[in-house]
Length: 189
Figure 1 (cartoon, rainbow, N blue to C red):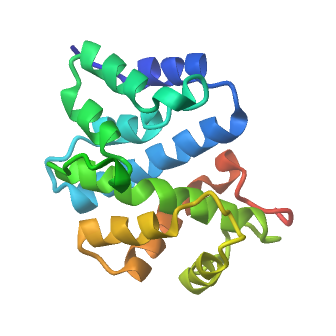
Figure 2: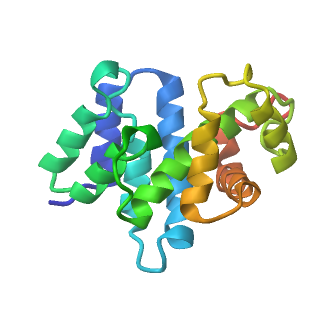
């Protein structure tokens, strides 16, 4: 069975009403689309990687105590075991094996995307001049974006085999062209 972006977005909107979680889903989708050729190779399915990013938290708002089991089950009914596995593995502490580049990329892109977005929201110019050094400085302040797991940010880069600075720069650059859509353009735009 095929699963297209429009169907995935419709499901996300059905299960998720909060703008913040939808914006996070869209942002992770965009970062994963950029990650596909970089970390998955030339044969990577950009659409599938984007859908994995979009749907990874789709069940969180409605069924927080059952996350990610509802979305994983739904993906399996659509014949997308690859996406189901990646979503089930998108947090290192769940202990699910990372069997593919898609699995590793999703866990590596989720937390840093949310953290970079938080950094943008406190800057007058949003993401326009955001640099890795600023993100790393904020990472040291555990009170800032306190729900972001700092260990997960570092573990994700390690799973990809890239330095943290390089991965943070990649996430920033993947988000920058979409600043207006994601609400990251700042107050001076």
